[in-house]
Length: 128
Image (cartoon, rainbow, N blue to C red; front, side, top):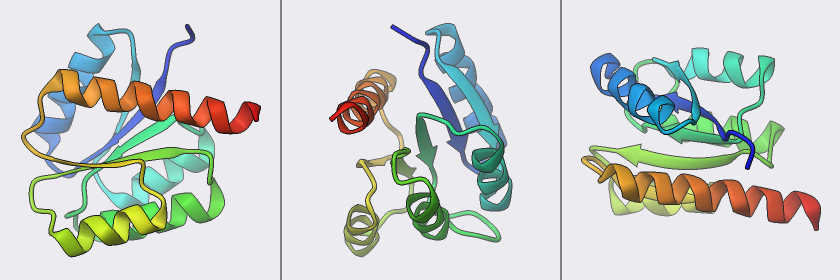
């Protein structure tokens, strides 16, 4: 199976760096963005398979990043991973096309399962 290319977007640098290390150990190609603006630039330059995205960030928030990704790159699967999500934000994210909405802290195995599901979902849609 090809390596899944991940983009991890979270303004909590220690958290996202540790998560990227854990993903890379498991042979996932994980890049990091610490804010929404950087994430969108990275998506433009090298399209990831799956984006794991925080909601609460300075500048462009996660909902706006999700909206932009889905508008320009509908095939990218986005998993929201937040410590402060509300039911309203979950509904909005899912309506905008998020693949999943998870709350921090999340078990790493659950997150990996969701990433695999999102990747398989993307490949099912693109080969159909």
